[in-house]
Image (cartoon, rainbow, N blue to C red):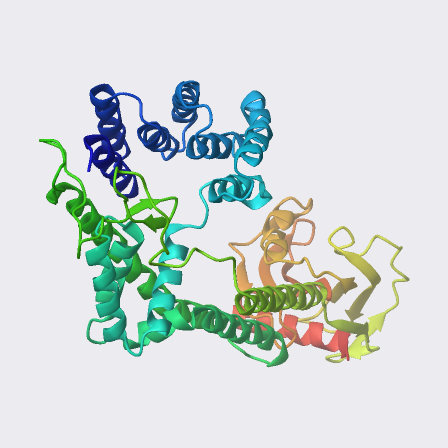
Amino acid sequence: MPASGAACVRATALIAAGRYPEAREAAKAALEAEGPEPALFLALARAHMAEDEDDHDDEAERVFRRALDAFPDDLDLLAGYAELCLRSDPLDRPGRHRRGPVLLERLRELAPDSPQLRRADASTDVLAATAGRGPSAARVQRHDVVHALTSAASPEAAGEEVRRQVARAPHDRRLAVLDASLDALGRPGCAPLRRLVLRRPEYVFVVQLVVAALVIARFAVEGFPVWIPFAVAVIADLPLLALGLLLRGARAPGGERMSVAVDGERTPGAAEGEQAPRSVDGERTPVAVDGERTPVAEGGEPAAAEPYLPEMPRRSRRELVLVGAGAAVLLGAGVTTGTLAYAEYTAYPRYEAVAPDSFRGMARMDVGAVPEGAGFGSSSGRVETSFNAVYTGGSGDGSGLSVTASIGDFHDATVALVEESGALLASTPGVTPLGDGWMADAGAYGGWMRCDRYAEDLEGTPKAVCFWTDRGSMGVVTFRASEAMTDAEVEQLARMTRQTELRPVS
């Protein structure tokens, strides 16, 4: 093989290994030593394009222009330059982007049915222009593993076949990564992960279905724990995480194997100091160019051959159906959950005001209707009705009882409303708080309750006041409460009053 051909093979293998600076140095050195060669110019330009940076794209364009000045009708150079132009940003590099269609037309004139034209023409695809670099390394790896496992009679047979291919193409990154992946999946105890990689879309769809059903079950089954759907999702994600870590761990050793092959092999006929792929079974070692493996013909020029691994296809119909169904399940669960959660959030208990004529031996005194908007809590929600009830005729603790309450939609009510009642009492003129208040048991109706003790400045009568609120009512109860009346008795009387004055409505 001529020295320029060996340098081209080495530069291409270095690009496949991800060693772009070394590939550029090898191509530059060969150009200086051997003179202009289309394949060397193309390898140098692609080593710049592989960096996926604006400065390197600019340098790649300069290489292509220089090469086309010397070889204006070279199909590979025209196709490579067309790809660079068509995949450039039309806003950031409008001039370069406009040159793409011109280069395609030139290719059509020279070789209308050539693979170079088909490859360059694919760059006009919207997805190719957007993604630029194609499918992710993880997706390509999973595709290759599935293809290898489904094409062989057993995992062991798949590994043997891939090792034979690696021997024929030691510089092919996809094959090196596939070989390392099958080695990792062939370890003892990895059989479940092999089944998972083959049925990953179905597994993800089933998990989505189960989690969505559990999320909705939270609203359908009373007392269903909220954390169960999240726990199931985390547990179900563990096998996927283990598979992802195993495959990620295999990508690095795969790249290292191929990189070692680039450095550790010599081709007869290469110049001293130049290392290139060796031949196997009398054939030239394949070169990875744009994801295809092609053997090197005499003279160092690539010749067409079938790739060892199939091209990365678009997503299959089965995968698209499962992805679409999974998205529909998640969307449906999200909409249903959002609707039910909003209904739950805006729900509030309904009450009707009872206010009996007598309570604990005391008679109710008519104090007139409460003006609209003047009820307790009128600024904290939608008040449907308010009432006052004052009971007189008794004596001692619990006498002189009065209650003011509002009924309505208070679904935004929080414990802060009753916690602020202590500050409200302290700012009320004519009363003096007696000690600190306390949060009380709200009782059967739920919600929150706080009680305080105070004394009226004019009469000096010790009293207790308890504020309550829930999502359907709020109110305040006051009555006489000497030091002999315990806090527990104060709470009990306040709860009894609330449950006597209000009656739940289904």
